[in-house]
Image 1 (tube, rainbow, N blue to C red):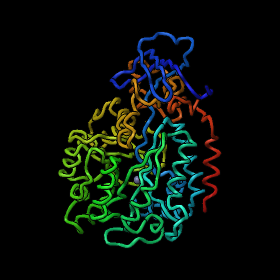
Image 2 (image 1 turned 120 degrees about the vertical axis):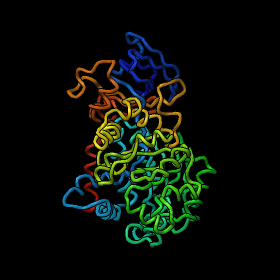
Image 3 (image 1 turned 60 degrees about the vertical axis):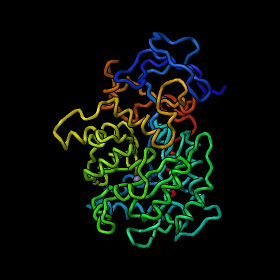
Image 4 (image 1 turned 135 degrees about the vertical axis):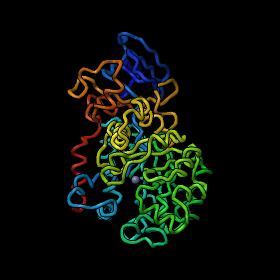
Length: 448
Ligand SMILES: [Zn+2]
């Protein structure tokens, strides 16, 4: 048995999905799965590895574009909006080849591991070479991203994104040429060649109603349904998208996606920031997921979504780091509540446990890993432990541990991370990679 492999874990405190953390939780593992969970075990048995602090299921980061990690700090000067930010993002995308992508994604996924993320949904749309040039392996980028996650130690769902238009009835141009397969058929033929394995799964994405026409969107939705894959789409991130969609089709983006058969329990709308009443009802009655990405949404001046009303309508929330301007799922989680407080003047829209659920179990379902995100028998042994003895969390009482972590912790408080029963982070350090050095080297390799 390797030093990374755990067999018996004793958690000082663990969150098992309720409103309070449990003290003295003994978790027996069977390979990559949890075999049994016992509570009120007051001291660690001799053979157990102790996890000091609060242990929770590993986070599922349900929406990421790993390469955008390189934009951190490069887009903050001067006035602008989402669209000027997008121009800068396209410049970075133009400078990436599969080798650069691999290094950048590996470092970024390793940063995610340090933050307690054990599974990532990578919304992947950078498919081809400069000008749309086809590599010998048309999945060179997708495979690089999957391999990067494997080496960083986290599970991945490659949400392969169809991207065919530069805007409604607009040809792709510039960097967008690298995103487009040219047709739905070419996209499907390429995606069908991707292979899954024990740590990597594949899902489908409609980039947005800006980038995929209704006929192709219907085809992508049917393709995902045939395979029971997750289906994701950027939805109503900006008012301009709504206006263009209504002008072209006489419908909101949500209504359009409903019409083409995209909405279902396997569907996750990403952002869903600017919704009409009818949109809320469609997403809710469809049992859809909605992935909020609050740190990106505030960074890009997108706006504040209607998280509470989405939940009341029947939608299930998950969370994503999206542009990776920050990688901190706790910050994403509390921002859902705190943003809504700022807008409404009212506190208490979402409990700490509900926010953790969005960041763990619901996110896992959204990216097609329903057997992760729980500390329970048969679940995958994917765990993250927050130390409670650092300056931010010192003084935490067991009764309020969930609230303390959700409203005061930082990613830097994550001490130990386990994926499939194996430690990938111990005492705050990644066991395989020098993450800061890898980030440095990967970003330095990009054209400035
Ligand atoms: Zn995105």
